Every structure is written in structure tokens, then in C-alpha cells.
Image (cartoon, rainbow, N blue to C red; front, side, top):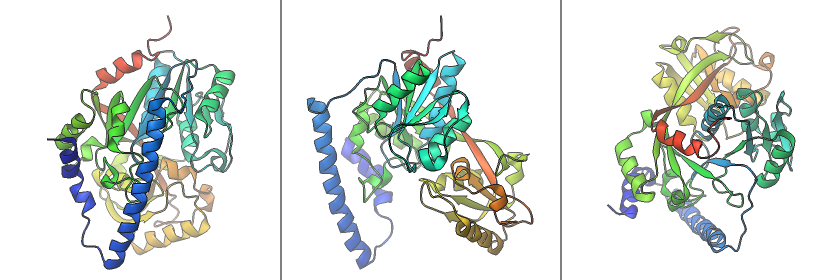
Length: 379
């Protein structure tokens, strides 16, 4: 099967979502035209890098990129956390670089130093704070110019290796290893480039990857077909299979912890403002929860009192026993005491579900790649 045929076969369902109205057809034409313009711009940029017209700067330490082809939601942050822990377990000093989406300040900012979190999420973005909280002692440096951010990280913290979170399209910084995340439940963003679909660049961009990390493989509708398709796109590249494993359930604000089994059979309202809300919904369903409602907000949404009143109302209308959100959303929530009392149950605060990235196949291939980028441990 050719590459084009493989992509058409896999993306057909996403590209034929019901019968559109005349207005929807007109809007689709507008988005298609805009996507064509976007593709042209991406093509010119790719040519500029391939021809050497645009330069690539190199930092004096190994840089490992965790990126993707689509806009958000593939599991880059859990993967970065797992990689940082892997290197630290082998005695390597790690630093993390990221752009800081959702942050309101520009320039290079330190979200966390070797003593802990040193910034607010409003300044550096929710993802930077999540990384800082989950990886105490690991410096997290934010900046649109990842080379300058890397220079600052090296000057202040002297890491042995730098992890570049969400930097696959940031080609002006040299990477020693490109790991590309692909969400097995929605790998190609509907098959279209922005703004009609969710692709940041054509899928052939995967050919720059040293390995493909498939996330949510336990929820994939047809994993075998997807793997064959990826083999057509990037022949010979290791395919690392992973899943999002729920690991912790706790009250908002770091309060009481609860067993994951506590969700089974309960009426749950899911609240999230992330790129892929379906991931949370499927995880809750897999844990046996009865999903009675979903409050979905834009990605990186800063929650305010009106939002929490809406959540409270939805919980009561749906007779939800519990309200569950994600770690990333919890960072953008007001203090627990500001949450309307109840949100479905008298006096019960919102619950936060934490997930880890678990490798289910290909761990040896991934470790070989990491060992080649400074993961051999101190002598």
C-alpha cells in the first residue's frame, strides 16, 4: 500500500464526519483554502532548513526533543517526565526547555530551579509548572527562543542533558534525538493541516524522527493498521508503544488521596481545558466511572469563579457524585476554598486524576537511543 493510500484509508472516518449543512460546507472551503496557504508556508520553511538558508544552532550538551505532528494532546508532558526520571535514575543532571504556552510574559524565564518552583503559572504556563511539581530538583526554563533558554539553563544549572518539550517544529535548535509522540486514538489530526485539521506539518515530517512513541495504544481503534501506516511513513524507525496509566487520585489542592477503585460505579462529571479532552473521558470510563457530564473548556483556559459556578451547576443537574479534572487543569484552578462548596456532593472538593506514561512495548529500543545521548551514567 502506498503512503497516500495508507493515510487516506486511516483518516477517512475523521474526514467524513456526517453530512454538513450548506454553511458548514462553505466554512470548510474557507478552512481548506487556509490550510493550503499554511501548507505552502510550512513547505517554504522546510526548504529553507534543508537548503541551509536558515541556520541551526547547537548547544554544548545533548538535546533530546519530545514533539509531535499535531496540536497538543499526544502525551508529550508525561513522556518528558518519564525521560527525566530515567536520566536522573542513572545519575545524570537534567534540564527541561519549553516554550511556555499560556504564559503571559516574554523572554527567558526560569519556572523551576534546583530548589523547586520559582514562578507562577500565569507567567510561564501550566505545562512548565506541572513539570516543575512532578520533577522536584529539575530545572525548567521557558522561552520562545529555545537556544537562549538552553544557554540560560547551562549557565545556571550545568545539566548533562536537556529535554526539549514540544520542539519538533523548532528546527533552529539542533537535536541529538527526535522522539515524536503519536496519539493512537487520533494520530493525524483529521488528516488536514491547520486550521482545517490539527496537523502542524505534513505527516512526511515524521521522517525526521529517530523513533515514534505511540500513546494511548490501549484505547486505539485499530493499532495494527496504524503501525503499518507509520511504517510506510518512516520505515525502520522504532515504534515505542505506551499507555496513559492512572496513578493517583487526590482532592484539589493536594489534600486527601483516594484509591482509583473509588471511581468505579460512581456518577462523575469530568472537567478539563486540554487539547484532547477525550483522553480524560476514556480514562474515567476505563476505570469504571459513570460519566454523567463533561465540562470542556479551551486548552490552557484560566478558570474563574463563573467557570466553577458552571461546573457546580452541571454537577447538580447531572446528580454527579464526584467531579474529576486533570493535573494540568488543577494548576489553573483557583484555591480549593474558592471552589463552590459541593460541586455535586456536599463539601466534597474537586478531584484531580494523575497519569503516568507506561511503556508497554519497545523499552529496549528506547533505552538504546537514550544511552547514545548521555544516558550511560556517571563513571
